[in-house]
Image (tube, rainbow, N blue to C red; front, top):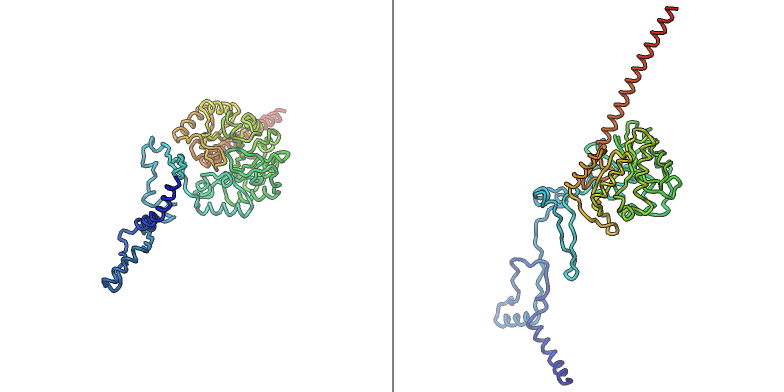
Length: 448
């Protein structure tokens, strides 16, 4: 055994020399791109003599020359063409060129090294939105927000509709959802990307005035004010919220205000303070069905409490429109969604919106299902059949989706005009009654 091992050791060095001369190291190198017509080898000597040629060939065999790396000059679309979709490859959307059943089919792709390949689901075509480059409205709203130190849920929650809502065709069409009481929440819902902290910074006493000033500058007809949960405050920030609404209405009386509130930890007095502050729409989101609420929302939030908040707000002021929102794609069942809608309708909720849950980061809940636009349309029809005033349902619909706000704005203005006309008619009737009474009194005086 020892003799055979020694023999192998003696053969090792000659074998290495033979393999090195037969397979040069340079032949195994990989290059980015090899040109179609590589340059000729410079193995010939400049003089072209027989001896010189033989010497050059021998030198080339012992020390091969390194082949240069080449890159092909391919035509690549510019970044502007890629974003704007003007390149030939992106001129037609894949979803638009395919039949509905193929366009709605989810696409998968394998990623990772060969030793650890995994399959992921690509984002469906109906959920892809343009990069928020923005127009003048978009830039103005962003500049005003930064200058006044205000926050928006559009940015904090990474809403996919930010370019559509902020960049309306004119100021009255643009919408921004301002988030009051800072950008840090005291709760940690498993679907939300807003920052969390048990002890967030104190309230800004100038925020109500700054918010009212920003809304007066923009000249909007409809605005959504929302807030983070502030369980560290005795009233959950209800008075701060109400003061912001009152100042906004004072600076722009024709402004319609929707307040998207927290549950105030079940404090119904705080709910009444906000509902009675002069707002036009009281919104509070149940987010998901009752069975999934403990897994999706913070454990301090419950489905029943959210329904009670909406019901109490409805009873606090006559004619107040109440609104809520639900996410689909978290694993909810059909009968659970129907039961949630039934409870919301019994509580007098007027408006409901459905949207696709989209995972903000890998630390959040994963998407269980991408709901197709046809399914969203089916839920819209079913909710309307149950008696809701308005339903906005679609993959990219969010609780403050501006299409829904446009409809609600029209409803509110019609109600206001109807109330004013009824008030005018009542005043005219009372004037007529008074005139009749005066005539009767005059006739009685004449008889006396």
